[in-house]
Image 1 (cartoon, rainbow, N blue to C red):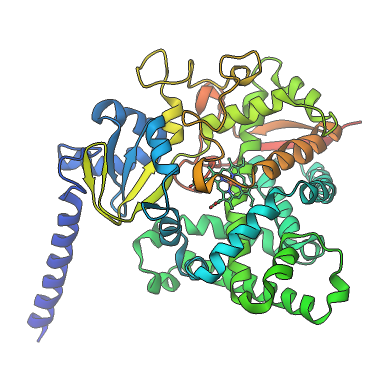
Image 2 (image 1 turned 60 degrees about the vertical axis):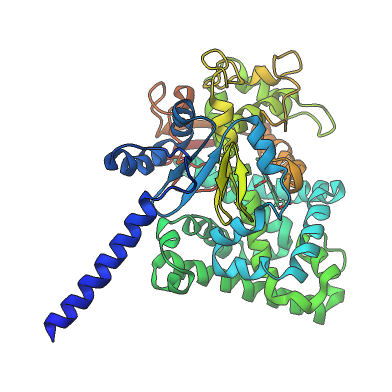
Length: 487
Ligand code: HEM
């Protein structure tokens, strides 16, 4: 009997191993070059090298293999299409060619997938999202509420010997997002509970274990369990808030938050989706805004004269132009934002002469396209591309007009171009930097190895693949800062 069981287990194991081997060795499309081609060792090393610095890895592979190749990360395969023309091809494509929603569905798990595959909800909710996020009146009101919150956070940081830079700014921006999306009262009531959970939710979603497990088994893993608990708790809170709006409308008159606006338009019919929809909005907006600020600060404090110029513009009235801040935001985005933007092919598609089958994940990499140097390579765009030089984007700089072009993509292009751009700039310039520059001084206490680690010797490495889909956080320990109220 044991013999039979052993035979069955060995057969399953051999079957599984053969299938894994077949999947690993069979190319996505005939002739399509693969990163790490050659020996088995070099194939197995590709995911490791990609994990260390995907942008550098992609630049290297592009030189070796051309603009279109695939990377097998064991758990998932991506076809990368690099360069401005492919940025355009992928980002401007229609849903029925390269699907935006299918890749979101695949990456975001069963709870969010349920919401985005309800077509009656998806289209109107995205319309509401776009008009609401872009309303200047809303953004102005929201800036006032968030300035108060920013001051509270900075003030709290002054009471500690040191605080972690990336995590503190991240929680501050999550607090803004919760206020903007659910209202200040909701933030005051639930912020302490929900902000750390949202942070965890984003990190869990990127845990490789969840890429390995089918959705039905997510609940067996710690990140999967936490993911469900957070989504369910947030759904419970949004349903309670919805019920209160419907039962006591007079108590909510005058509310300007996103959720209230959505309920006014969509009513009670979609109660099961509000929670996951709001969490997706947090997910869409938080990392890029929050993590741009620490990288901008760490570079600007090393770049001669930059921090003073940031200060001078951050304290100006919101109606004044802020070219240096704009340039710093662009330069930080050029080096850190959008490692890859994904789509899924909906039918067999010819890309660069290769027949890519339906259901393949294809990606452009704005960062790899922007990091190739124009001096050293024919496909480069920026001079001194590996240095943080915001002056290149000033009106008198060589790249002053370069923004949201196929060569430099920060806020996307095409049908899914970011509707949160204005809001993001308000959060960074008018709220965080203004509150900081008007009243506080910050010094780095520890956690940097300047001249040794990171882009342009900034002192810290980005956690390119560990912690987020957008702008990365810091790899390893956080950078510790001391915050003081200015006398
Ligand atoms: C520095 C800040 C930000 C950057 C760099 C950024 C970047 C981007 C990019 C590149 C895309 C396109 C993704 C793709 O085509 O696959 C995008 C889409 C989107 N962003 Fe942002 N974003 C930022 C802030 C925000 C904020 C504050 C929000 C507010 C919630 C937001 C909401 C969205 C939404 C909802 C989409 C999807 C739009 C659609 O599907 O039509 N973003 N963003």
